[in-house]
Length: 267
Image 1 (spheres, helix red, strand yellow):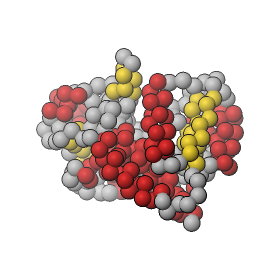
Image 2: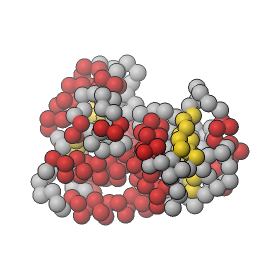
Image 3: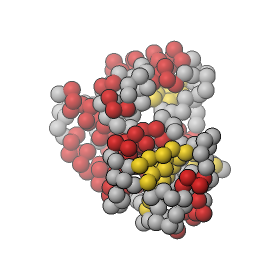
Image 4: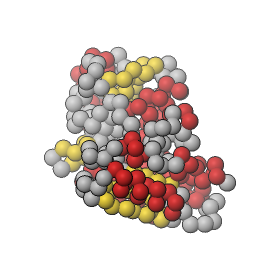
């Protein structure tokens, strides 16, 4: 089963449009983009279009790649005072302290659940990619409780929050990174979640037949956005998410579900 993330997102937007009618006032969501990156830009365009569909104003702030940490923090604080939620588009340039920047996002406006000073189970909402992974598994009737699960990558956007949420739902989770672990760790997994950002490094021979393979490891290769898994893995998997078009659209829809959840908590 090759997952059509756009179709799942479309179903979600129908429900989100209904929820939008419950908020009579205008809603604004702020996004900060630092530097120029074609992969980042594609994600921002998708988020902007989604906001427009839901009659939500996207307030975008662009900063140069050499902007210092303090300048980005000031932009976060300004957006937090002017909008209902703030997104800091990652990754930030290496010269910027990402943890310090993300720590400036107020909990009640953190739709990405990225503020590192708050434990995962204390955030007001869960990370959108982790929510998208679970949504896809549930819609595909893949049992999560008790499932042998390997999360590839331990990053803040995909790996760490996905591992946390899947553990919370009863999966037996182990994590594999490019620095620690072995590709053999994947061979017994019922569920594999990819978030390493290493184009095509997971091959069919690394997986068992019938695995549920959820690839959220989007990165750029030869001018295209590609995933961690070789597309040939689809032949071995019972569930396979292509990149692009798999997890991404669902994760974007989850941002706006989180936004409405945060607004509901305030009311």
